[in-house]
Amino acid sequence: MRPRLTLMTAAWLLLALTAAQADVMRLMTWNIEGGEQPPRVIAERVEAALSMVGPVDVLMLQEVIDAAQIEAAAEAGGFAHWAISDFSPPTRITGAWHQSLEVAILSRRPFTAVSEWDLTGRRPEGDGHPPRVSDAEIPSRELRIALDTAEPVPSRGFLRADLANGWTLYAVHWMSSRGQDCTAKDRENARLREVQAAGLVKDAARVLEAGRSLLIAGDFNIQAPGRVLRVGTDPGEDCAPTGGTCKDLCGPAGRDGYDDSIAILLGMDASARLLSSNLDATYVLRRFPGGAIDHILVAGPEAASFAEASTPPVRGKRWNGSDHRPVLTSMTR
Image (tube, rainbow, N blue to C red; front, side, top):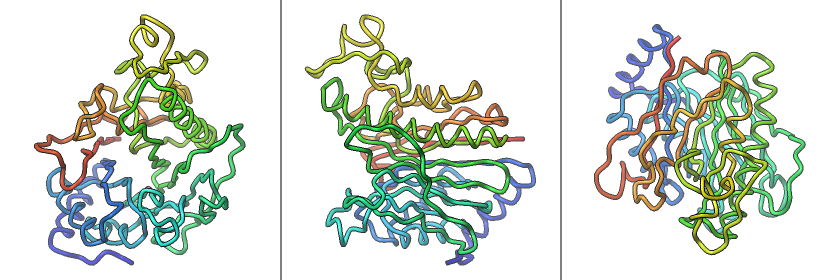
C-alpha cells in the first residue's frame, strides 16, 4: 500500500526532496516497542517521533510484529518503500508477541533487492519465508550463509535491503540479556550475539567486495567496546565470570570481555566505524549502565561520509511511547 499524502507527509516529502538534491542521506533506527500495539499506535508514534527529530530518508524499526504495522508507519511518515523480516511465526501461532518479533526498513529511496538471514528457518520455532515488501516487483529472498554454530541458534538473523544509491542496509535486533551481566547465562547470550554478528560479517564481505558501502543499525542489546567490562575487543580471549560480577575478572584487571559481537563487526574492514560509541544510554529506563545499546555502524568506500550518531533528549520513562530512544546519523556526499 502506497502512503496517502497528508499535509504533514507532504512537508516531510518536500524536506526529503531538498535533502536528496543535496545528496544527503539521513537515517534513524528505533526500537519502537510495538509488539503489543495496533497499527494505529505505531503510526502515531512514528508521526510524533519525526515531528520531533525531523524527516529521515531511512527509518529502521525493531520490536514490530506484522506488515500492517509497517504499512501504517510508512503512511504516517511518507515512506514509499518498506520491508519487514519474517523470522518468526505470527502471534496467532506463537501466542506471545515477544516470540513473534521482527525488524523493518522504511525508505524514501527505492530498493533494488531485499533479503534476510533466518537461522531458525523451517524449524518449529521459525518461519521459513522471505521478507515481506511493499513493492511486488522487488526481489525478496532468504539467504544461505555457511556458519558453524552450536545449539541453540539465535531466533533472529538480519534483514538486508539494497538501495539504488549504492548502499546496503542491515537491520538487526540482537539477543537481549534482560538486564543480566557477568553470569553464565549472559555468556550464553553473548555467544548468540556473536553468532548474529559473524553471520552478518560473512554476508557483508560480499557486499564490500562488490564496492558497495553498508550500514548496520538496530537494537544490539550490548554497549560499545570499552564502555563496560563484559564487552571485549578480542574474539580470541574471553573472561568467564559466573557470579554476577566482572570486577577483577574482565577488562584491564583480568582477561578481555566475553562479548565480542561488536568487535566482530568492526573487524570486517578497516573502514568500519561504530558511530554510536560515545552515546548516552538509549534504553530509557537505564538498566544498562555504560551508554547506548542501540547502535549504527558503517563500512565501505563512503563510511567516512557519515556523522557521529546522536540521540534526542528524553524526560520520564518513555520516548514517544517506547522504552528506547532512537539513534540518528546523516551522510553528505
